[in-house]
Image (cartoon, rainbow, N blue to C red; front, side, top):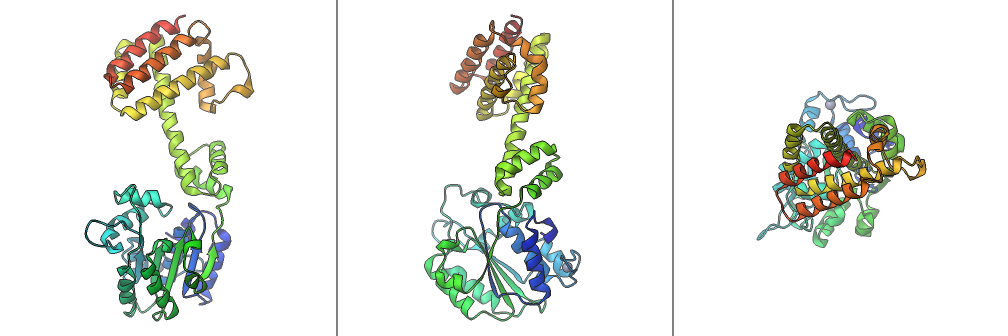
Length: 373
Ligand SMILES: [Zn+2]
């Protein structure tokens, strides 16, 4: 993670860079802000820049020995503390989950509680930073930095510290080891001890600008600009939410393609292809089969309405609309009710665990007749 990888947040980046270049770093800093605004991304970019031994004016070099280690998150002077869940008998520590932690961060620095829980296979578990953690970090930070520079401790969600742990951290902040920087990355600073807050320099990270999110979506997912703007607007400055929306719309696109395929084959009476289509859909899992049938009902409804040329009642995306200009005449008062009934029956059969290959093949054959009405 470099400053150049951080999405938007130019004002904050600038002041963080300046702080380092003027050698005026606060020894404890509290990065706070809502989910998905890039708190961890900024903390990591800051840490990398500080540790880089050949830094440029605005970013780390990426090639010095320090940067090379940082790229794998194995820099000896970079320490992490983050919440984990309690395994049966003993208190779990960050170091027990370090491999998963690195893997998640190397994949993306925009993540939330749910991402982390999933990574460690602990959905529905309580995340905590246990007491022993403070002793261990105190010990690690008591050594001189291996490269003669700074030691950095990044603490993700310090609000999840057990009380005793927080008290020990406070002592560390009050009498910090030499050349040590603490970066606290918090989503809910209101839960921190006021004494900890008063020892830190607070940096409020605002929502990411819409424009920065939309540019990132275009670059990363090759989204059409109009769709990227739309998603960025709904994401409210939360990049995690924006990515989720892209994934949902990718899933919808998949259903759209399945739907178009089925209608085309049924119209052309391509039995063999219909058979293959049913097999394909039978393999995607029950939840997605149900979601597809839900989507198909919505498409039939929308196409029926499309015939009335009432723009304000139309909720189709640009891609769906293009298809509907040709397809909608096939959905009319003679068949719309029966198609909807068939779809909801198919849905029931899937719920009741009827063989999905049969359910979908059966439905596609009925479409042959229904489309001709
Ligand atoms: Zn470097």
